[in-house]
Image (cartoon, rainbow, N blue to C red; front, side):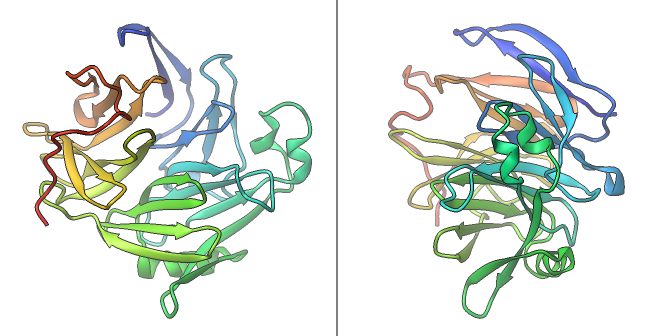
Length: 294
């Protein structure tokens, strides 16, 4: 099975509707938002897996060109602040040698006046992440084999990805590591995600900006998967405990005003809504946070 659906909420966080927005796909996994507010959903389906754009507001769906071949694709992110091009798009692959793909659409794709053309027009360019361990730099190779070799050695089974202010973060669930790329400097670092209760595999990512900048992580790989946060100083904390749920956490999202956080326990297909008792949004001041011991 597969596909993608849309849950609709009112301003108070109440559910007001659900609809299936994409059918005919298989094993849809993470995905990510575009900067024109559509969703790209990724199929984790081996040689048959591709990525599809979905617009829940218009019903538009189409297989898009962000990856060059079939794969176990996981998550998607964009960077529309690149000084050299209009935008670039990144996709992770949950395979032992799954390359991280950077897709640059042809310049003409941005000039049609229709944002749907950006990811579906022909003649885009594919490059693949290669990490250099000798000097902490990275490059983008046009050869997928180079990307697969680098992934196999350093970041197998990559999952969640996030780009903000020319900083790209992604995780390897097998290594339990967070990789941080400075897209301007061409340098990279890695840190362990193992911290206190966050002792299983990192999965999808979601960033929230405001008075407190936090990168949130879903978790996989065990019987008590949680939702964890990492603040701008690198300290971790747990915001949702998964005790009693023998499945991974997934589907992490925030309402437009950041008053509500949504997530799901995948195995039982239940979606949960959370809010702060102090009435502040999730990007407001974080107070009385109990960080994991270091």
